[in-house]
Image 1 (cartoon, one colour):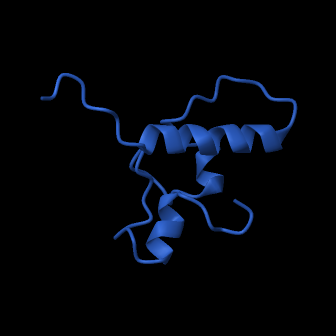
Image 2 (tube, rainbow, N blue to C red):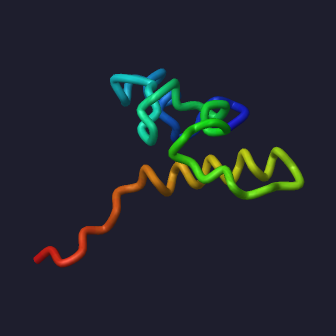
Image 3 (cartoon, helix red, strand yellow):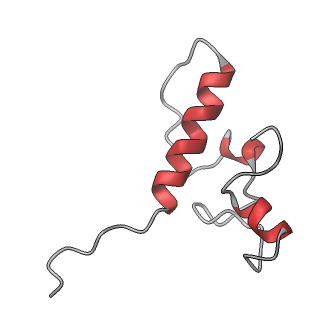
Length: 75
């Protein structure tokens, strides 16, 4: 995340993969590492000893929430 090469909307917008850098989880703000700290769609209830662990957790939580969910009962 420090390099700016991640799977968040701000990066994908910068490389012309997404039309907008807007947060795909809450719909407000530019979806970057800083936004994840305040994103209303994220679970901020956990307390972490280190802000690095919190940042990593929020990043992977966002990736999980954005991943396509398997379709159940199709076929």
